[in-house]
Structures are given as structure tokens and as C-alpha cells.
Image (cartoon, rainbow, N blue to C red; front, side, top):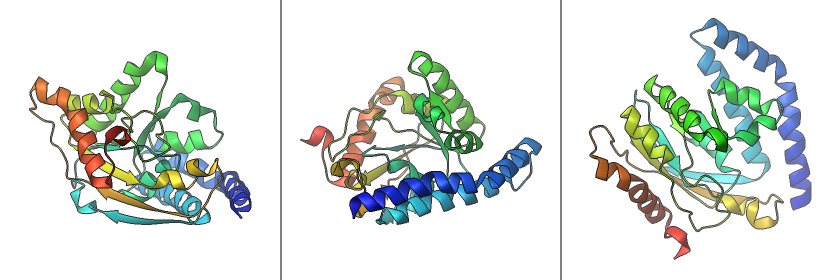
Length: 242
């Protein structure tokens, strides 16, 4: 059953992207013209695709704390990163889809890269990481929220890796709030099953925002550890699996 589910998932993953090519081209034109409804148009199809991926995999989700997302302000969302499904989860269960800071390898996936560009995603080349951080900071300063996984890679389990400083530098330099997001259980969908997909339940907890405007340098340096501790407590698993 897991093998069949995985095959169906991949068929949908690429088949739906191919079927949505007319909408993708239309979205590109809307965005290029600066149409007022371009963002809503893009978000509609991104959420439709991401939601179907979750349903095909048999994922159920409980979300808490959506009221903690500041209204009318750009923020930096900082989720822990358990598995590949964290991406569709963030596209579906925040207030709306937001730009992701993603690895440069994502650029190699046909059609996916185009939709990511439509979302203003930032791609990190390890050789030019500072440039990517500046791009993300500029997005936030322009009023666009971004999602950055501070661990930088999947933990593939309950344990959390070290939270790196990049996401928090973006927030501090832009004077934007950090919104921690605790993801609990997403690795059980695929990573725990030798990359075969099985139904799983995921808990997402959106924590209260942490203001960065006016933070002293010492407090800025402590922000990554502070947010990591808050996320670990929210999902019930300490950092490093201790």
C-alpha cells in the first residue's frame, strides 16, 4: 500500500504541475503586469497543489496558534524541519503561502522552480549564502513574509539540529518579528518509512511572535537558541533529542 501511495503521489506531483501550465503562464503574465489579483491567483493554485499532495499521502493536520501571526506585517517564520513534507505543510497551514528560502538544488526541478519564483522564493547557493540572505531581507523590508528553516536541513526525526543564525539576522536587519513554528510528526510521512509514504498526523503550533526591532546585539545573538528552545518545548521534544 505504501508503494502504491508513493507511485500515485509522484504521478500527481508532476502530472498536476503539467496540467497547471496554462495557469502558470497566466500567473507569470499577471505578475509581470502588476495585476492587483496576481498574488491571490498564485496562492490559489499553490495551495490547491500542496493540499492535494497532503491528501494523497493521507496526512491529517492539527494547527494551533494561527492567531499569533501578526496581521498586516511582514514576518520571518522559523519552523523546525523534520522532513520534505514541511514545505507543503507551510504552504497550506500558515495564513497564506509565503516565499521560502530553499536550497539551490530546488532550481533543478522543472515547473516547481517556476511556481517558486512566482512566490518570490529565495534560492541559497552555499557559495553565495550572504547574497541569498540579502535577497530575503529585501523581501521582508518590502512587506513580504518569508519562511526560513533555521536548521538548514531535515532532521528526519524528533530531534532538532542546531538553529543557525541566518534567519534571525534577516529578521533583525529588517526589524521584523520572528514567528516560531513547531512541526511535530512530519518525518513519519516519508523519512521514517525509507522514503515510502504512509499516512501520519502532524501537529503544527504557531508560537507568539518575537519582536526584533530595537534588540540589543547580545539579545540578537541569543535569538536562535531562544526560538529553538520555544519550538522544542511546544512539540515536546528537547533539542538534540536529549
